[in-house]
Length: 73
Picture (cartoon, rainbow, N blue to C red):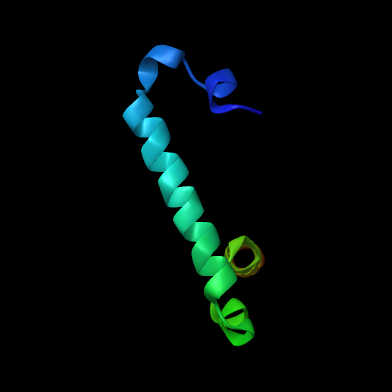
């Protein structure tokens, strides 16, 4: 998909497009220049998603325990 298909063409300028393109190319250069071990250290979307799921499981366990414990009062 193109950026112009996602957003209203009047909401961004050619300066915005060039800035985003430049930042994207810089990010690709950093990925190419990094060492193998740096890829393992870097936090990515899977790490964030895993932390979110673990947090939800802990919250569910706490809510379940609180509900079960409050039923016995």
